[in-house]
Length: 100
Image 1 (cartoon, one colour):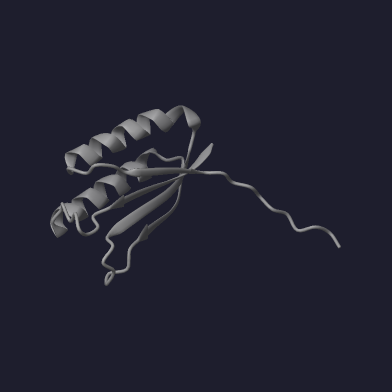
Image 2: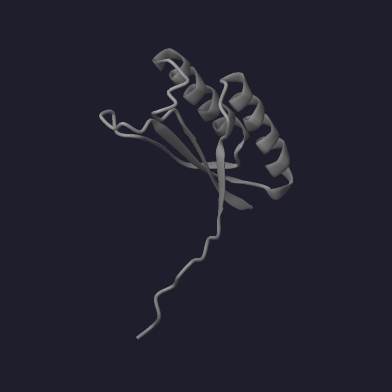
């Protein structure tokens, strides 16, 4: 399993998407992640008063599904005239407290 964070944005000076288009883009990415991830870890959104308009989705996915998911996210990005979607794979290390 991989831990992945997908980030999307509509940040100035680009502002390619209207508010309604941005909502549709966010909802489509969120739905795709929710349906296709093995486990959704969280969904985060920029502050309403921020100049930066972003959303981030954290999830776990089996390695065999990575390329298919990237391909579909690229299709969604293209549909909403976005140049990119950020895909970040996290290295997860569990730290255990030592017995004293």
